[in-house]
Length: 54
Image 1 (cartoon, rainbow, N blue to C red):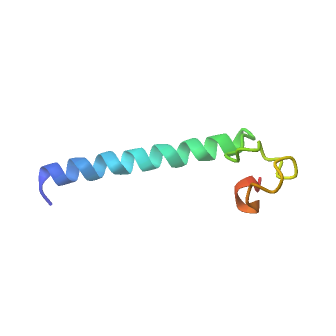
Image 2: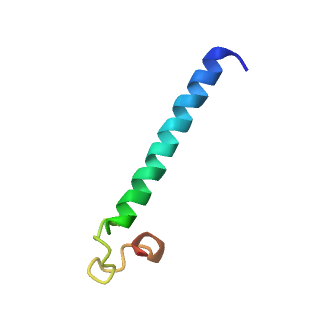
């Protein structure tokens, strides 16, 4: 693997890790990624049960 390929792979990996860490942090703090704020009944079943699962 040459240097430019390694640099791009490292950047992509760093971004992926940052996203995962942010998602874990948000979940620990009780924040939801669901657009209805975690209340699927209030959004008229527009959310999937997976996205609102806490």
